[in-house]
Image (cartoon, rainbow, N blue to C red; front, side):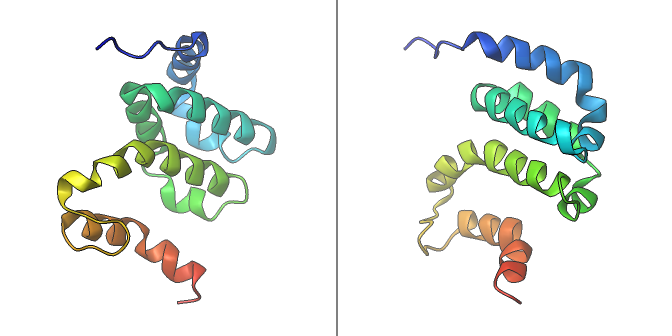
Length: 123
């Protein structure tokens, strides 16, 4: 079982993340850079757990602000989707049938997305 071959862009995204991770949250709130941050996250986090940790660390402490910002909210949503996506496949290990089963996995989903779902559903 050979590890997956990483695209050449992954090393470039790692270099970019390492140079801007302290400004990640503020760059996420600017119109032009927010779309570039989203692209960077999509590429880097697809192949690298280290990139996921760097992105999460860069956003740490800013989630509430980002979630209410015009551009920052899109970046925050992209980050959560890209970072959590690989975790969703592991929910079976926690005993969760995503379609309505019980168990620890269901509790994690409800705690993670509950407030978002309430606001979307008007609750």
